Image 1 (tube, rainbow, N blue to C red):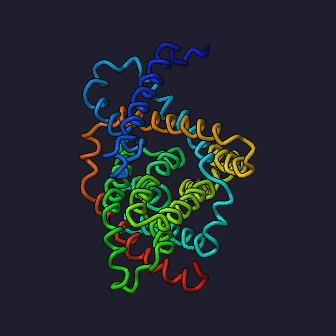
Image 2 (spheres, one colour):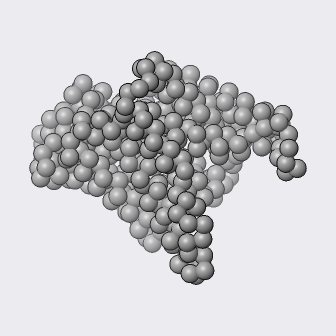
Image 3 (spheres, rainbow, N blue to C red):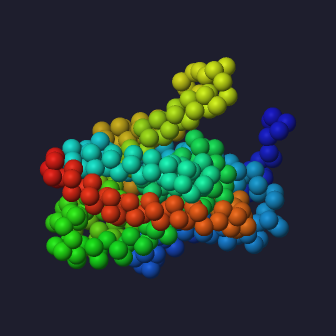
Length: 355
């Protein structure tokens, strides 16, 4: 064993603790109240982790620290890779060119808006701005966790970003059905269940929140919303690769040309993003029986929930409080863009390309 390696018992204790909290979060997320409010196992897991992390864990959990760190880093990356089992390339064909274009426009515009408004106008720190932007633009907590190793953010920055995803995504569950009732009055809103479903899928944060909002409207909206959301999730891999390369180039400019190219392409591309894309391609072949895919998907939810619980265990409420109201204001502005700007993008692209 390497002299700096943690004892196996300490490693196991932290992993087991994170897994127990992750499993508890999965069980709670199945409760009708949590499902009705679009609270996924990942959102519940970080809440449980923070509850223990700010009460019992600092006093009694020091031995479990190495395992918690392992869950927050290594298990997270494996979870992101297996997340690809939820997607196939056939999902792209299901929403057509217009659906893909709408998703792409919303992902890029939301992230760029987060960078500009967060850093230049509100003075939010760079890492938090990027994480809030990633969470709002792609797939909520899973995207934030996927971007965390690329951005190299601190635990409290990740938690702040996830909190905004949970808060405004939950608000969307109640807002979008109300907007659907007004779509005949407000001309800028997409009309019809199919088009409104794509609007929901391209603008609401979490998958669970998309399902909850769309099911309140009807089966037609629910079907197109989930597919549009899955295509948006599919953009996570190329987005993370592009973000990693952009950050590496930015770092080279900041520190001089001597650092540019050090380590080559592979040093800057997150392997787990490529693994995610590879799993999506493999899943598109439909080689594995459906029960296997369902079982592996549930295992993946446990891995991601365990990583989220580990993140919560290492996050202190005081650190979040120090972030102040500006990240919340940034998230609110992005939510406004997703609702209003997303409606305009959906109408414009839908009229141009046909939905």
